[in-house]
Image 1 (cartoon, rainbow, N blue to C red):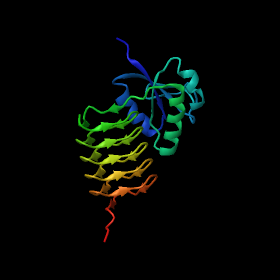
Image 2 (image 1 turned 180 degrees about the vertical axis):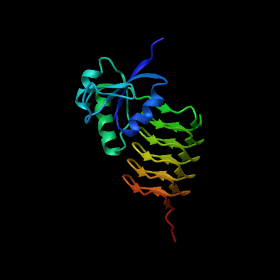
Image 3 (image 1 turned 120 degrees about the horizontal axis):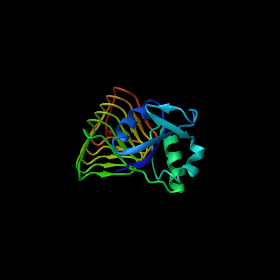
Image 4 (image 1 turned 60 degrees about the horizontal axis):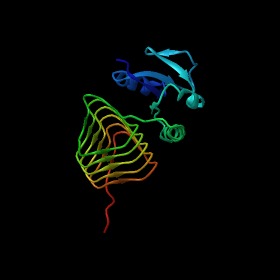
Length: 193
């Protein structure tokens, strides 16, 4: 039985990592503006640049963007939405997503990540290995969360946020849209008197 086809937009380091997961389910090809068409990366061909997305839609209906820059990822998803692409979620077999969590489209959830009961995770997000999204919190669209970071209960992470490695977003904390939270830090809730 043949596999469905999937375009992976971004053939850099993160794209290569995600390609290992994607190939378990899909017949993949890369799209990357900085790599020559015809190049083969990890046994996957680069078949176009983002300007070719309209033409590639004739053969590829599924697409996922594996570029770490949140604004670029959002912009390309907007273009691909207008063309008509579908955006599957790629979830590692070692990850856990509660059936009572809400998960958007076009997201990557890598090994040993956890999305708990009652949490909401938006569209086009990238969760690296070991990320924990605790119960009853929310993570916005187009966020990138690096390895071993935790978003705790009732926290709210805005849209387009980058959270570094080994970060704790504490219970009830709010991270505004577009924030860049550095590695090895904690974000505490605002104390109101």
